[in-house]
Length: 374
Figure 1 (spheres, rainbow, N blue to C red):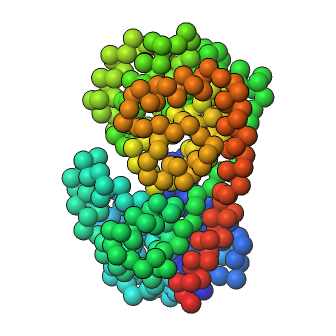
Figure 2: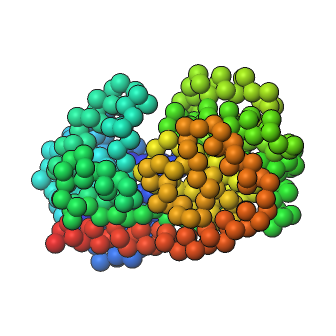
Figure 3: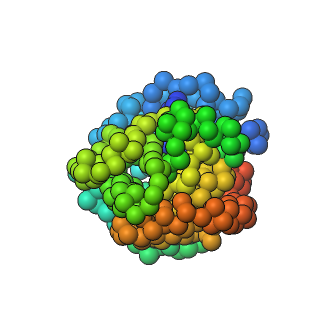
């Protein structure tokens, strides 16, 4: 087979959620299936680190897909000539975007429908694009893959799709997320938090991630607990909003709220393994990879009781109401106060993690590809 793949999110040093899924699945599938050709379609100069095997043909299509007009031009005018030139049998799109100007069978991975549920978080132009094109993508798709049963049910209910057309392909845990020794943890804490324990927030500083309430909850926790535990925030502040700024500036403990920005994966793994707990109180997620990464590091997780997060966390995490500052603060207090509580969560997480791996993900994606082409 000639399998064309949308690889526009394979960007060096910028593999966030969708890019990470693209990287981890394709790295395995291309190596495991040398009998097939994979045409990787980039929208800019690519890095050789993403050419995983000899059966990959890298192609650069234009224009670069940087905003909605260019998204349209890239997918509907840049990609079709590539599919035709290489006689593609399938177009696989790990981030969900499809080309409507081709008859090649298409398999998108629809990670979530957040833009339908929370349009207030999306800028005007991208929102118009999503609302217009994604229903068309879903209608066009030969099959659909998604990353949780929650998202599968969401797609079925919103678009009246036959459930047998949708395959669930859970995310996995990247290599290197593992426990550290106490000595190694102390080195990390000395580097980032002056040697103090810390709660870790990982994610783009965006309204969906609920950081303003996390900061307010941390401030409430500090007022009610005799501790100097810090809050470390890791992620781009590109979408910093006024509510986050206000929560930070009003906090009596702002000197203990640390913004590390975007950091290399090697450092993220160390921080995740060194945290007292990870606070992932997002308002909506199609999956939530940081939950798994923390569990793999034997770091307790505080997460939300909504959307897909209970599916990912199972009984191995502490659940909170993400709209309740008291709920999040109480969870911080509980995990901070009891080493027995932390140990119990870690033991349960080892069982929960058995459900997830990138090897399993890649195998399920490949099965979905085979079902597409019959």
